[in-house]
Amino acid sequence: MKYDYLIVGSGLFGAVCAHELKNRGKKCLVVEKRPHIGGNIYTEEIAGINVHKYGAHIFHTSDREIWEYVNRFAEFNNYVNSPVARYHDELYNLPFNMNTFSKLWNDVLTPADAEKRIAAEREGCAETPRNLEEQAIRLVGKTIYGKLVKGYTEKQWGKPCTELPAFIIKRLPVRFTFDNNYFNDRYQGIPVGGYTRLIEKMLEGTEVLLGTDFLAEREKFLAAADKIVYTGAIDAYFDYRLGALEYRSVRFETEVLNLPNFQGNAVVNYTDSETPYTRVIEHKHFEFGTQPQTVISREYSSAWKKGDEPYYPVNDEKNNTLFQRYRALAEGEKNVIFGGRLGEYQYFDMDDVIRSALETVKAL
Image 1 (cartoon, helix red, strand yellow):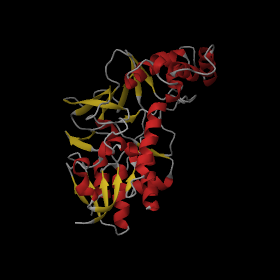
Image 2 (cartoon, helix red, strand yellow):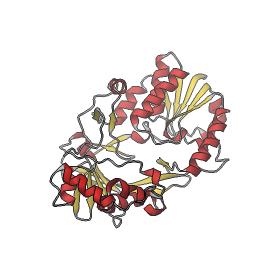
Image 3 (cartoon, helix red, strand yellow):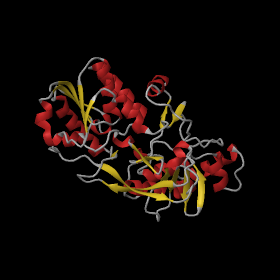
Image 4 (cartoon, helix red, strand yellow):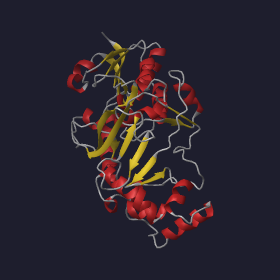
């Protein structure tokens, strides 16, 4: 059967494209390598709890048009992301705010006290930071860096902060208010019933093939449609002919616990270097669950190799240069549109993905 569009990947970018193209009268086929739809925002019900199988996803945006768009497909709750940092046996609020500062320093009682303390800890910093450590100290001072940035960042990237480029931390959120809301965006929440329901609604009326590897059957699928929307890794599409782009990957250990509440918060970051995982997610708290059990996921950051799931692009100079070479190859694929986090080798928030998908469809 001939299709107008073949969409590779059923994550947010692919699902939005499928929905919009179908509404324009186009016949679409979605092929998905995994045994389920939704890409990395897939949620699976375990013990009556919607578990974020590929890490926590909190929808947030300041774009009213995007907010109204997603609300066509799901009702969103009023979840506000207020993570907690655990450094050994100490707990701190994130982002860095007056709650954080007053616990770090007993003599900090006002915003002026906090500003003075942080300014003093910046003294002697290099004017032009040579690495992430110098950049972070310049932004937040030595105490916050040492307790809440250093260990977490080194686990995330698998390298000492002195070997990481300064640009990775362009800014660190510092607030001189008692506000624990991590995001500054106007709209925020989690779909009631999980993200999978949202994707199912987007894909209604569109044919979907699960457990299907587009790259393994490339020629067959290329012949099946007039145009391809490809949301997989751009280097994989070209068989890594220029070399593999670098990513960081994440491994999850998920556990059902026979107690109603494990940590009292959806997200707790472990910022010391001794704890092997970066954070623990308690999924029920995303939807204010009252189930008798709870489900937690420990997240371990790891180096990526072929066959692993790529999560975070390593957007340093070397990889960005390599990506530009792949993008030049992609421009020669006249009937293939590359999009999404992997197709564009860029970390996107979910509202950015939706906006990019909508703009792609308009361009088509």
